[in-house]
Image 1: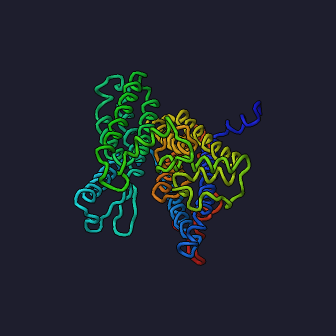
Image 2: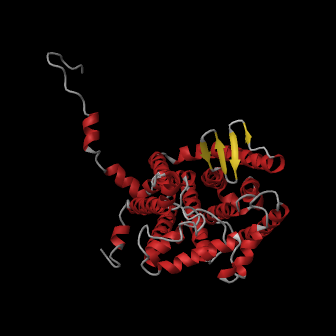
Image 3: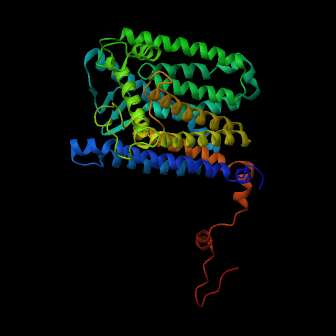
Length: 428
């Protein structure tokens, strides 16, 4: 088998597929468990039902598993054909969301017909959507399709810039004005696409400069919007950056960003190496804001300790390795680009979330993939994993192994010819 002992296992034709579904499946199970742990007591105190949020998240998990199964059965041509419509729908939903937020801020209009907006969510009747999550997946498909069609022409600035950069800039504006963290996830996605396309290093330097300038403009925009809403009573973006660079003492952390970081560190310190036990966190009882969503990693640290956090980070590392392995082994340029972009999106979002919770990065407020509470994010994430699974099945060795497999017994029974009826002859 060779050394190390797992080298032979990784050489198997379907190794990428099984690594992908095992790591994503374990993260999903851990996420459902931690959502129940973070919300059960609060749900029971407020609604009398400890399973309220968990049931909702489990329903979205089932929908996400169905989306995963459907996406893993689709060929690359289908993903390419839906790329442009998905991007168009995402842009329209983001425009509607920003328009409703502007009407609410300027004129106090909270609802237009069946449409209502709340910060990052769009409510269409009784359906709650987060358009930025759909925009991530749509940008992966559309960006990979555009770059794959251009091929060697990407060496020219004009071919590289059009139409990719204007569309990416529009998405950055529509998403970043209300959610800088999601904009940074989109930036990581674009960097993954360009890196897989073999773009020169000077392009990344230009993108880095534009990214820093864009974040600066968004910080300034938060200052101009101060006083227009409860969230903008102060420049919260500048405050979070200031707290990261020069954090005040814990007893002086009364502002939102500083208070969340301080309480997250208290949870991590309380958990120690092995945690206080599943369900036994104390800071989730109103002391740690957004414990079920953006700061669920702090709950994991308190209840499962450093060991539990290391398990989650190891699963994300396996997911990152598998995604890049798929991107390297597939032959189709579109599959390679889309796999790299989706991997950069998911791992970049995990790094931004964990880095903000433990204090290694400024706080931005993005959910942790698979783990945080959130229906739209979970469904879209599982759909992206399904797309990666489809690409893993298209690896040359995997495709040959799948074609060489005999059909399952129930398939043979289903398609077997029926015996002739008694007394009748079968036509030749």
